[in-house]
Image (cartoon, rainbow, N blue to C red; front, side):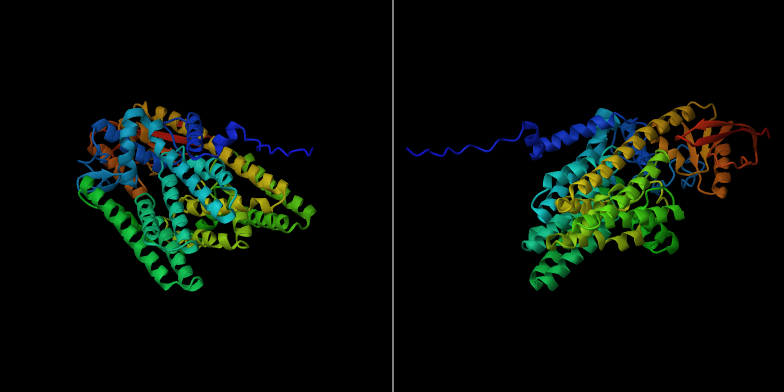
Length: 562
């Protein structure tokens, strides 16, 4: 008798692997990880001063029990234009004082903040990072057919979006919208153009613009690239016109919706003012813009000095050469030496102490793999164009200043997310040790950022407590943005903030006009002598610890008797 072959079912994956590869369970697991990580941070501190301004708005809205984002101004009778408002960069709109950059984000967060405070409000940026991770999965699947779930977890846990999920900023939501807009345009080119893909892409960029000004640059460039590809490569004039027209309709619809919301809440449009300000300053101080572009693109150190340029460009070239050699299976000995150089640059940055890592390449090394390997894959080239073509526009129109104290080139996060997703899809083409090395770098720099956010938030909270309990009636900051660090306790202390020496003198006059018997100037320790003010007598100075390695010098003044 002949033996009968018995087919055996393929062994099933462990339950936890299945959970990591199913959308609902994967999203829930990533959310739970974010929630757990958030408890490492103090809710009274954040990654930057812009967050403080938004939190101050939420504090005020919750205190007033309404959805009016007016943060008010205690010294308005003496400074009606808000020239030295305690929340620096506050805009006067009618009789309101506004310190928000995105009205929809704040309005959506207010019920969450009122119900569960800052930690519950973080649900919005957490969901944004999860949505961006799913966009990364979609990009990787279109490039390589495999690696989709790997991209999801890399984008979610080993990229800058893990940092931005834990800070009340709109970056993660904006990146998610723009990345999904890129996916819709990609499908319009590689599958077929239809009205809803262009409409969806335009609407995504329009919604992102309500939170991130650079969304217009990304939207304009990506739609232009998609239409050009349809026209030149696909010889599809009708498809190019359809995609471009419907994208414009979607974009304009969302712009009008945001304008309607602003008029309904504020009585006037607000977001357009920020855009016109960015546009009017476009190209200004060109040398500074070039320096900041280099820092936010490459640098591992928070500086605009030569060190930042040398380390950043050197790191990028070394990573690119390492990926190329591994891909071509060439010169393994040299590859190991180059990997050692890359590791040394990261160790040098980590040994310098916790702080910002401003460069996209330094925080997202897999982006280099995406660029080097993606050009050889026809299905990846369009995503590379989506990521790289908008960069000159973003650099040209972004607000100048502040390139060093930020994480991962926050204006170009969308580029990093797309390139990293392509890089993950192409990783199987590299040697195993190089793949592991790149992933280890991504994890290490992300952990470094999470540690920095935790330490910074606790330092800011302690400094805020110390300043809040000082006896002086008014606190004045000559470093304008400093008071915005303490947005979580906004309103508990009367602050004024100035951006130059003339405004500092004006702030002292406002304090005098308010009848304050005492005031204190809270300045970063730069070794300079305390300023003098007519009508005020200096009483002495005291140091207050701020962020690790940085102190405030607090100088007390008493009103001079007339």
